Amino acid sequence: MLEQAIIIEKGIPIPEAGAKTGKWKNVLNRMDVGDSFVIDLDKTDVEKDRVKKSSIVSNAAIRLGMKIRTKRISNLLRIWRIQ
Image 1 (tube, helix red, strand yellow):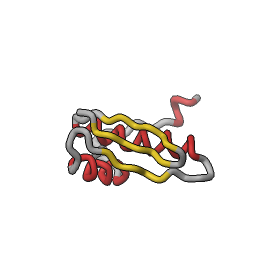
Image 2: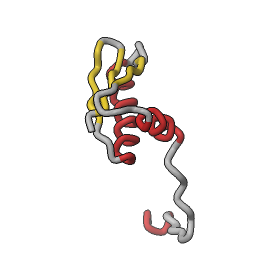
Image 3: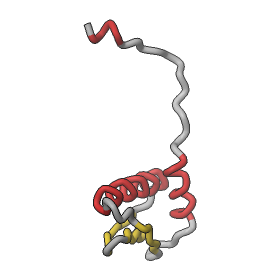
Image 4: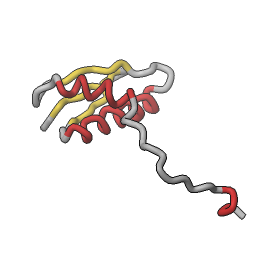
């Protein structure tokens, strides 16, 4: 029954990468190895916000062929470019 409800479509273009990663690509492109920056985390749910923001920045770095390291410090997320 489930198979009948799903319609497979061909020729639908894949959209460009989202604006969220685009913003971070611009920041990462301006960094040299060893540089870092800080993102303020949402005070109501620090851990959830850390995971979300870390993931978005990590995906942007991967697309640029860079490596980053992240560290939560209180309500801040520090991100270093390591390669």
